[in-house]
Image 1: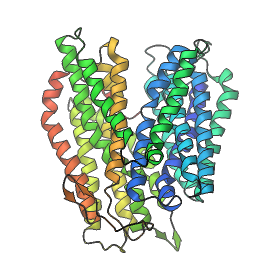
Image 2: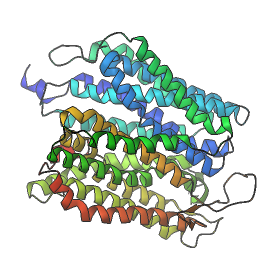
Image 3: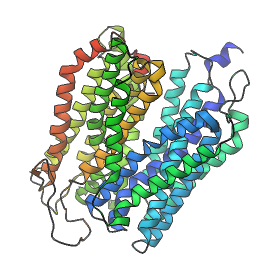
Length: 509
């Protein structure tokens, strides 16, 4: 192969870019309108809708463990992506039926839709990223830039999906998300033979072997378990949130399982402890950051002035700020880290994560200033909320790209899958925690009527009566976490045993 070709990228990269862009369009389009749909169409209380949002996004981070296992053992990347894409499209169409039915059976249809999307994501998500790397020979220096291009596809889909799905009635928004997923899926099915080949001409991502009865049982059983957990409260008229017990219980059990391995050396043990400690802090980061699809969307809908030249901007549009800011700021952060790396001033991974937490706290400081003394019927300028999202994006670019790379560097090879699973568990716990925190948002004038007297939520004995107090919870939580992690960072760096991650792995991909 000639040098000119080696400098470019294979067509398969742009093919996968296109497929992933439509999948992210589907996911983020649905996410942009989900909590508004639950509160406005299904007439749920803010707290109940927030908990469901947290359960949904939390489980989305767990199922890739199952999907990745079945892909490696039986399905291969291609078949996993087709199964996952089809299940996600079906799930979005059930959300369309749920929105069409409203309070007359819409909740049950929603459970079916969410279950299908959650399982489908488990098959789709871990496999398409893997195939990007398979397009290139081992140690090819183009892989970093390939993932940067691929990451732009993710953010492009995430950018325009809220603008499309949020501009129409909820049922049509869900339908648009489903159609978007089908577009990506059909393109993948018909283009995979032509484009999914390595530069040596070898087909990549093919099935491994036929599914056996045990694995089919695992898929069916997982679908049944997730549907049961999502539907548990309604089915048994219970206040017990079994999804919390499941996710948080797994988050505790996994480290115990790994740390009791007697074959671990002292250095391995210390490196693994770094992963667990940073995973703990990641929960606070994403718990605050992921308010974007929950409480901050409710705030945008009810107490943010959204009028522009006589046109009222949909509340879901604010969720396009983050992906747009990522596209704009990621190259700048790459240059900053590169500049510091050359001068041996680049912060360690723990310090970068502490900075990310501090920036999330700063974002909430901005919005807290805006709402201080705000009446229940008053609204703030949209620029306050846009500023929050831009600051949070800067925090994301400090913290987010580090995680998976760090786990792959620090984990002993024989435990790499388990430790990667732990990292996904931390993200699942963070998203579930985000739903729990969102449920603390105080009642506002724009909330739908609910039965019984209005009760102000409380957190650790602290009653939240207004938005200023609500946002202070996030400032204190993430600010304290940032300070503690910064103090610990030098100690954590020593426990990593000079295995400092290089700039190339840490910059936004």
